[in-house]
Figure (cartoon, rainbow, N blue to C red):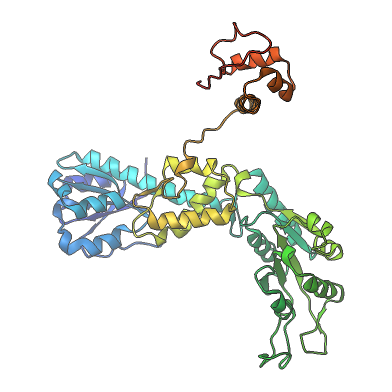
Length: 461
């Protein structure tokens, strides 16, 4: 069956005619690169490569080889004699950049098979990045779980209106990315998107940041400054961490939402402003309103349409999908070639609770890319080694563990007095004896009387 030609680079000085013939039979288009030559690569083209150590001089070719092998679009296979591995540079290049190493002498078919495997591995890595773009991307957000797909649908719906949107969710979940996605799908997409973090600006500066000031309004005001609200005219104003907005600024913002006009500090004229408001916070707004930290009338003007950003720990397989997307995005920061995540890293992704959500995931991956010394990022590189061995449990196992723990604590609190422990647990002493036996907490209960006896705890399983 006819196959399209695939590109292969041979780096060395002596490509055997028999190997070249075998490669051509398997539909490989071979380009011989003598050390120092630049490949005729088309942008985005996948390829395979053979690195012939038997005909290279490392002292002369080292810098060239590092630059050539660093491409993430070529799957490299190294060939050479056993003595070539005595060179530390050769071992480093094989470890960091090659999918396979074949000891000479060998058959041509062995080399060709390895080349095909290396090409396939590169194609898998590129497809992993493409998967994130294939129906799972909304702006810069990646996800395929039900919660994220529901969020994507909501984004597309609310983007078609001009009503205020309120985004709630824990810190680090990507609320600003959601706001940007709404803006970019709205009729205001060609107008400004202006963001302000209401919790990061000192209260005494927030008024002037929001609404601007005129020259001479206060000491140091040497020229007029347009506020963030006015700068967003025609577009979208994103008020991040709105729950931390001081009460004084809440009153000013409410007045703007009612009148749709701003008055710069030190000015006397009002300027009409047309903006769409998107707000976000991690604060529990119901509690904030009850405690008087946030105005209810302002909240109800801001929260016309509400979106909930799911925490990372609730996104299941999305954690791995997002991690691979971020690795593909930032792996250029690495000094060596990073090909993916080790199995223990994948396990740690799902066992860890991610209190910092997506922001923490990104930070851990970027640090691991730089600090990793292997081709795959491990749980240790992510500083999550303690979470590798956390095994998932069934509901029955969880109940059994909780029951055992409750019995142990009750016995401890009552110094082994079964009657008191049973009363605290809300069960009879006979039931407690039965549970002690079932959980292996007693070596022998047959000779223990039903009253007054003190149990002998045996916590071995």
